[in-house]
Image 1 (cartoon, rainbow, N blue to C red):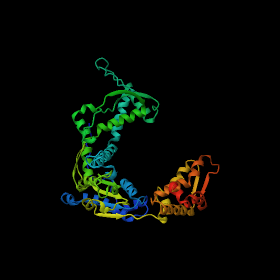
Image 2: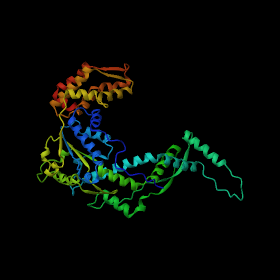
Image 3: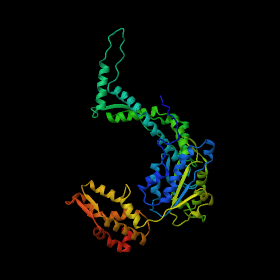
Image 4: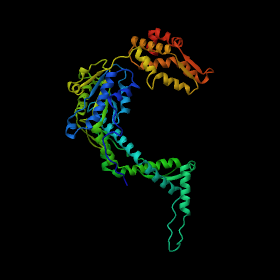
Length: 458
């Protein structure tokens, strides 16, 4: 029977303070303090609003954020790290993937449907943690039934003496199963085949709508047939555990909780919004740009979107948009859309000092990554301070001479710098490699000096 767990829209752990959010982002993103403060305040306001009375909370609209800055300065990285910090449904999506209604492509409502699916997975995982022990016990009993089929009940009138041998044997097998002594044994269990009927998608309908309609009309068609499959005991136990989890979790309760969590605490990060900005000329490949803006507008303003888990209102979903705006300007967005992003944060370009910090300070710093990668080949890679400064110099110089791609330039510079070591690492007799300024100059100086060559290699 399903277990009905308490529904709650609040995150499982205590929400972080803005200062703690900024500190957590500082571990991975260098600089851009204004952007970090803006997203930290917006994230904290999510939890503040949930503590208000229902009447007042309904009136508090989210303050959407527009982050403006060149490529490679940390806009997307802030979103990625924010997704891990936010104990709320979080979706990152590129605005350039959407097309105007009537064109072939994804419609803007699909972002809300995707966010609901993420929320359903979140809530389901939370509930799986609570019922996993019971599911494992049930799966263990089913597996023991396969390993030792229960004997036929004995008529007490014929044989009044109870027999405990079967129970003893079952407990012995249970002990062997828990000790891992049956891992090499195979069993046959009933598995359900995943079947999906083939059909044509009706013109004008989205796959989501067709999926809902077909499943409502032909519910029995999607159950799938069962067949016997031979598999190792550990694999069988895992499969049976998943089956038991599905039986114990009430998916209607999960869907209700997920929809409410999306409505009250959902966050959508709209990347590359500058790609749909620009005034229309009425023809050409970008004819639907303004149309996409018009379609996104009601989602941000607040509308009701039909999903297979129920109707979702987007009035209180927080939207964070980001774009480089190299060619277009924020003012090129339609006025109604501009007004829906009251908080604007500009991210500055990165220079040598920031590159030095990016190479060494973050938990996922490039120097740490390459050192760890080559350590798997027993190569001890050491970077001197002057080498790191020379790498930052070269990256800054190439960014100035060619297209400025921000911190992404460090990846190309580091790959070229360590090309020889990475290739020769398995065969090196001397396993200690020291990267100093002279080594950096030897590997990169000629390429950087030749401007034409650096355009193609760095």
